[in-house]
Image 1 (cartoon, rainbow over the protein chains, first blue to last red):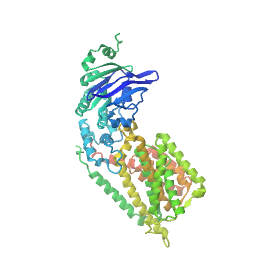
Image 2 (cartoon, rainbow over the protein chains, first blue to last red; image 1 turned 135 degrees about the vertical axis):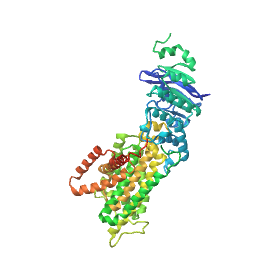
Image 3 (cartoon, rainbow over the protein chains, first blue to last red; image 1 turned 45 degrees about the vertical axis):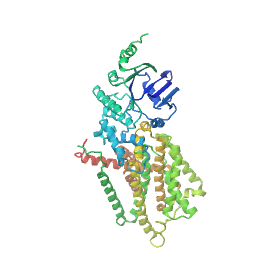
Image 4 (spheres, rainbow over the protein chains, first blue to last red; image 1 turned 180 degrees about the vertical axis):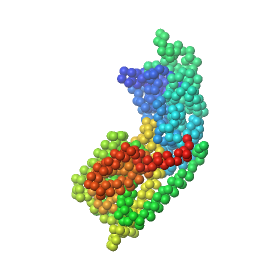
Length: 251
Length: 336
């Protein structure tokens, strides 16, 4: 079943074509990796779908509804959430509050002004549950600004996950952390996402990670899709290999 | 090991409530010991604290520096003056009941324009709008009394049950009004405390820390800022309402930008990153200014030096510095 579909999506920055007629399909329940060299247009595509950027032309359909011109707020309501490549957290708030705020927002409780946030037992329980899933529960009362990089990356994903989206975009969840931490972060993220039956699209550079965790891999190059298939198919694809190795494309 | 956080812990809140109650009791017992003049001065201090508390919902919790909060203080003060002159109303409760919606509407209008911008643009807009109000008040002297301002007689308290005429009226007013303001102050503090600890207040802090991410939680940033602006302006307006009967006169001075500066100064002095910072700041600033004016003709210079020193030596304000010191003195309890 198709969850998200883009039709002939275009986005140019000056003369650079970040998205050059992209027809992107995400199926419900899959764990999809978006790969490609720097500047291939992966983050731009995610930005277009999450309303962080406006497309020049084309269409975005989510659950068969046209969301091309929907606002950030409307897309989040519809069930699209994202994490950020450069960690985007509320550094002056506790780890607990960072996640709780997502839940308050999702539940439409953010506008509650006359009750104390910490007295909402439902939100509290769910927050602790999410923090537990991401292995951050012991850090509940620490300020987000005081976490180590690996924990920050996890919290960034946890904040997006707590919105209980149908479709979750993860923009390089393991960038800037050590190779040793990478596996741990991806183990955690993929198990939580799969357990929650959330469809996930991950932008990732590390091909070992990509091959290990993905159901499907889509490769972008210069704003276009170059390859699309299962990890085994992608491994066998010569174009992909040449791009990854920096060699010229086969004719 | 840390205690399990799955259950709500009421202990820190009990400690907090006990401390607040103790402070309130001390404040309530003070007047007979400190005399009339000091009681009056402290009343001014409590009013300044309410103004700064409101202001800090924007600066400390929403991350917006308003340089035009004199507008709301002035609107509160002038509303009372108009109610007395044009409607013959003398009841303090009516002043508050009518003045608060007026301040709220004005804040909503100003806020609607200002919250579309942040940082310096926001600050300049608030400054400009408050200056427009100051100019209007100054020029339309047949309405506002111009630079002469408007006199405000002593109001009646508690639905007319307490009046201040005849013998010892001034003394009775200063003492009675102190308790009146103290009660409104305590209610304001509790109300603001709930607001900043509510999901709404937390969301404001999220917007302050990271606007982009807050938008990606599905929060409508402009609306939150707008409501914060409205609440903030209304609190400061309430301070203006309480101030004018004590002062007996309102002039365009309370709408002029240096007065906005004093509110900013108060919040910085106490520490805008702490809930109690602006409260302490408002009270301390009132004393500081009063004594500076009494001591030297160059009181503005003196206050300027204090401000520069504050920013350089105690960037987190009085409360921030005290908190940091207290944390240093008990390093053993800290567990991480």
